[in-house]
Image 1: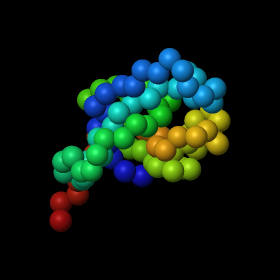
Image 2: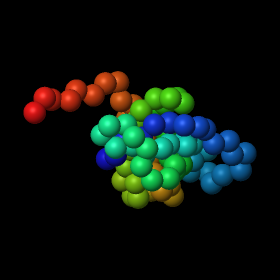
Image 3: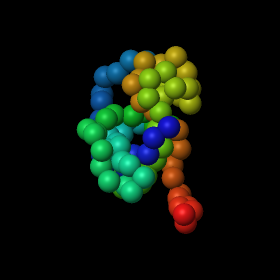
Amino acid sequence: MQIAKVIGMVTSTIKIEDIKGISLLVIQPVNSKYESIGNPIVAADVFGAGVGEYVFYSKSKEGAMNLPIPTTCVDAGITGIIDSVYHAKE
């Protein structure tokens, strides 16, 4: 799993049956210091994450595992919303 910040939402009036009713979010992957890394991607979300929230996500087959139909064709899926992160002192 990786961390990302939700930076937008996708609106689609026509999509495959398996993802009807599923929110599509634009997420920006970040590192452990919450600095942007790479390019934004679109991820399926069943948890109700909103713009500005941090989430963790999975890509490939694992990204679809939490969807109502786990064989749905998606490249990434939100696996949870981050409430807080504890950084242990070294």
